[in-house]
Length: 154
Length: 297
Image (cartoon, rainbow over all chains, first blue to last red; front, side, top):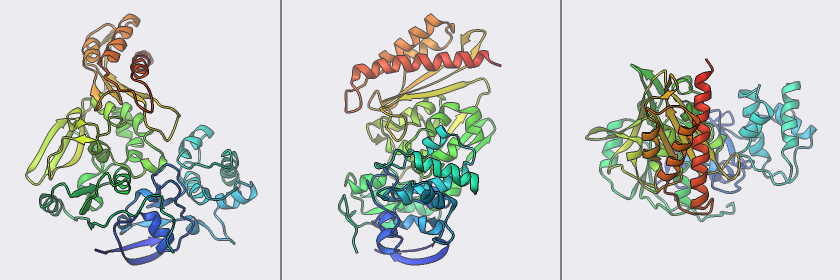
């Protein structure tokens, strides 16, 4: 039986009738069209599907889709645009922090949260907070450099 | 367009999110094993995908945050609502002040993304032997309040666990909150060993809570995780620690008794022998830490 949900997705309000037996990551990617939301492990380990749910980073593969009712979801698409990127998005380009790209949307969501909510976090603390975003191309250094550059330039 | 699914789609079920406790208990009362309760969802979603559970109905607690959430301190009792997330617990000044061991464990659960939705009530109800919240709560003497349509009852935290991934909840019952009697004098600490620093299940976890006055331990508890079918109170170690002198010899003896209290198995993460050894080392480390903190004003 379908369930009615009303929530905000990247700033716009959205009403939908959805099947309850699906993870939020599948709904966002396949139905809502926010294709930045990647499914990696599907078990909450890799962080590729990270989105902001009521301004908290969560792995959307572990959220049941109807749980978004009444809440606010932000994906990488909602953080910035090509002409006005989020400072973290801009510095990812500047610092060459992207290789294959699969982990990047989730990583940008987590780093944007660290940028806003943990402005004083040390390198050790940044690594702790970023440990839920796995990247198998880079060594995480460029991403952390990008966050620091974003902090510096705002 | 259908994305590639690592695991086949979750079988269909009916979904309800009650708006009041009476609506909740009405729903819970009418169903048995085919019903699953979802809070944060970090355990249930995996169980659904793996078909470890195949419910006909999923009941979401998300609209009951007012009734089942929040962290408060009243009349000397620290109350943590079942829907409090590990992030909320990690950043609560009350927890930080009165339940340091729990703050430490909360900050190490899963990852940032898990801590932001996983709940304390869910961690207890899932009843993993490695549940990180359990050893600190057992060491701090916490009780769990269970709520059902016919009233509430209170249990020591260790009694909520009845076996690996088996909780002692009756049909129609949910975890409502956890209570800790606070005491300014109590020092507590938690630590663990795991195969890496972050994003990992504990191989062994240990929590200790005690008071120290004039170089003697007052009432003390040592609790262990991932070394028995459930998290346990290390009874011999706790008994030996309570009232004993806070000396190096005694600390060695208490740590050795904690290792005796442990009844680990060998599995993918470590051998039983290694886990017992870890219990000894980690217990000793925590007690020495508590002693050294008690000497710095």
